[in-house]
Image (cartoon, rainbow, N blue to C red; front, side, top):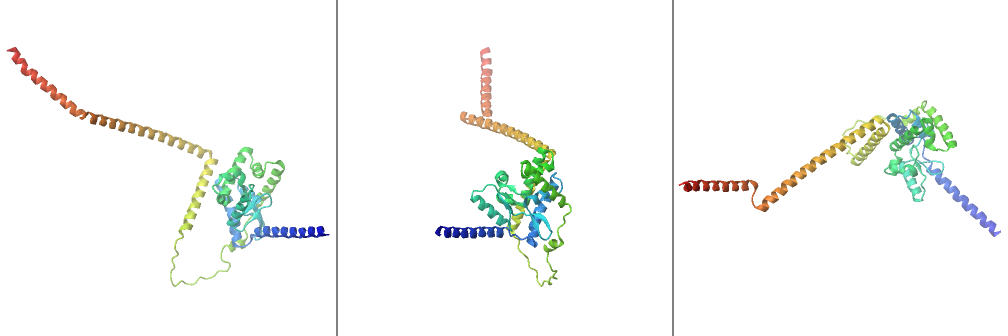
Length: 328
């Protein structure tokens, strides 16, 4: 009887703990899908995938379809699945966080617990296999950088398979059954992308809901420049520009050959400069040794030449005066 009571108490405790875990997971996954913040978050993945589709040779809409298959969630405003940038997955269904900071905190918590199989961002890039290609977890979570790496990886798969559809399947897994299922999922989303337009309510939510006529200002307020924010925006722009340039170099054979030719010319120029510098240093060393020798002997070459000439002239004069005397 005592044992049965103890077992019941353990069941009750276990059930309460399970309910707490489920509630915590639900709280973490409770990032809203409506409103201005949700619209801005959804737009981050879509802008990133559209930008990198234009830059690369990936067919229009394919990258976005893959992002929908990887990190997609239901948008109440648009009644369609849309990619969510702050998605973290580790061995199960993905968790949608309301902010980037919350998603990064979850990644750090998983890593602190020894978890390595972690997918992050719009394109769900796996940190265990691909994390070495990013400078930090923050970069891996960034929608633009996340999408840029996905383009590079997907392009390599297309070169290997010769098919964008097969490359999309391999993006998720190389197991035949999982590849076929995932490819069908991507193709379904791909067909939806061309007909999708954001809801009017979503676009309006990014602005003021009710237009308000601003009062006529009686004075002018000058807002100081936020130096830290400006520096952060400049750093982000530089990172994206560098990533775009590198992607073009990797995907464009003509640009790659041009860069190789420029590198070869620069290398030749450096060799020529080095040879010139070595010749200059040798000349300087020779001159310095010459001066040291002249100081050691106490006179220069010109002075020694002058002294020799004076001695020769003196000897000639002496012979000229002695010869007439001998003739007499």
